View 1 (cartoon, rainbow, N blue to C red):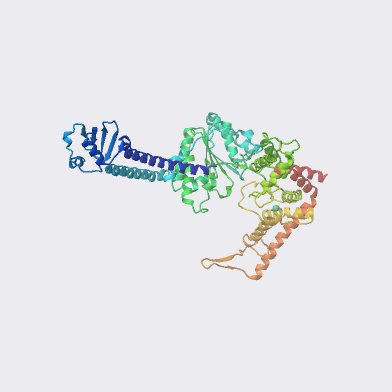
View 2: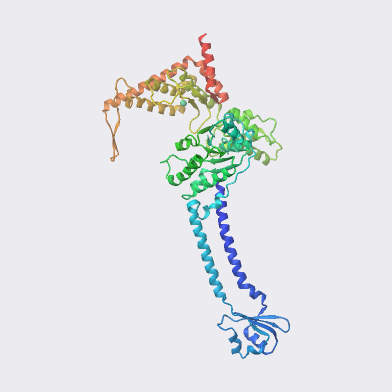
Length: 607
Ligand code: ADP
Ligand code: ZN
C-alpha cells in the first residue's frame, strides 16, 4: 500500500520540472512569433520598396528587424530586414530618402536584438536549473535528492479511521490489551493526574494478515484521533539521510495534530539487529531518528506509535526498551471459533445461501489468517457471480478455500486424521511435563500450523533461568519425547512429526555430557574440538574410544527419557485421549483449561 507513494512522488517532482520547462518554452515561442502574427502579410523587401516608390503607402514603421506598412487600400504588409546594423540603409540604398516621407517613422533602436533575447533566455534557463539543482542537493542532507525531497514528506496526512473494534472478529485478548491506549488518547488528563507514564510505543507481532494494521486503525477509530501511517520498507530504498528526514517530518506532523497515532508497518525493515544486514548504516539512521523522536516525547505530547512486524526475532533489542516499544501485543492466527466469527463478520453484506455452515468452513481452514478468510469469501462471491447465481453456495466457498490454499503461502486444509495425529502429539508433550520434576507450567497448546511445525506446546518459565540443573535438562528431554511417545501409544506407529524434537533432544543430551560435565562415567571434562583458527581444521581433543563412550552416554540419556515418556503416557492414557479429543475441537487450549482437565481426571484416577 505504502509503496505506491514513492512513484506518486517521483511523478510530482517530474511534473514540477516539466511545468517549469513548458513555461519557458511558451514564453520563448510567444516572443518569437507574436510580432509577426500581428504584422500582416509578409512580402519581400523589393515589393515593399516598389510600393513606397509608387506611393501606395499610408504609413510605415521601420524597426531593427522589419518594416511594417499600412497600405492605402487598408491592408498591412511586412518585410523582414534581417538584422542589419542600420535598417534604414536598405531604403536609402534603394533610392528612398526617408526624410521626404513624413508617414514613415523609425522605431527607436532597440537595445536588444532577437539573438540577444535568445542568449538571455538561455542564461536564465541555466541559472534557474542550477539553482534548482543546488536546492535539491542541499535538501539531500535533510530530505532527499531530486525525487526524495520535501514533497514526499508532504504526503503524510493524518486520516480519520471509521473502523472500530467491532470490525475485528475474535482477537479479544489483543483488543483488551489496547483498551487503555484508547482510553488514554481520549482522556489523557485522567492518567496524567495519576502520574501515570504515557505509553509511547506498542509493538504488534503476528503473521501476515492477522489484523495488525486493522487493529492499529481501530485504535485510531475508537479514540477518534488522526492516523499517520508509513512502512519500514519505504525507508529501505532511500538515500542516506532521507529516511531520517522523513521520520522527522512524520513525527512533527503527528505532534502538530496531537492526539494522534503513528503506525509503522514492517518495522523490522529498519530495526534489524546490528550485524544482520549490510544496509545497516542508513537504515540505522532511520531507526535512530524514530527512537530519538520517541525519547523526545514528553507527557504533553499525546502521540502513540504503533509498530507492526511478523519477525520479532530480528528486531534490535534497543527498540523494546522502556519508554520505546515497551508493550508487545501478539496477534495469533485465529483458532476455529475465531475463524467462524471472522467469516460471519465478512459475510454480512454478501448473499450467502442458507445451507452454508461457517462452523464447517472454519473447521476446514486451519492455519488461515483473517486476511485469508476475507479473501476466501471474496473469491466465493466472484465464483458465484460468474455462474450468475443469486446466492453464494457452500460449494463456492469450498472451491474458493482450495484456491486460497494453493496460493503462495503455506496454509493447510488439514485432513481429520492428520489433525488427530497432531492433537495426540501435542497433548503428549504437555501431559508428560505434568509428571516431571522442575517442569515449566504449560502456557498454551496449539495444533495450528506455523511455518514448518504442525503445532506447538508452549511453556511458561516461572522465572528467567540461567542456571539449569541436570534434573531440569532430563525433564526437558523427556517432554520433548512426549510427542513421539503419544504417537507410538495411540497409533502404534510413528511419524516424521517429531524430527525437530529429536534434533533438540539429541543436541541437549550431547551438550550435557561434553560441555556441562553431567555424565558420571566421563566426569567434568570438556570434550570439544580444537579450533585451529586460520587453518580451518578442527580436531577433536579426545580419543576415538572416548568418542564412542560419549555416543553411548548420549543414547543412554535419550533412551531413558523416551522410555519415561512412554511410561507416563501409558499410565495416563485416558487423560491423553481426553486432551487430544478436546484439542481436535478447539485447536488452541490455554494452560488453565489444560490444568483443569488434567486435575479433574487425576482425581478420578485416584478414587
Ligand atoms: P496485517 O497488517 O497483520 O498483515 P491486516 O490488518 O492488513 O493484516 O489484515 C488484512 C485484512 O484481513 C483486514 O483488512 C481484514 O479485512 C482481514 N482481517 C484480518 N484479521 C481480521 C479479524 N480478526 N477480523 C476481521 N477481519 C480481519
Ligand atoms: Zn513435538
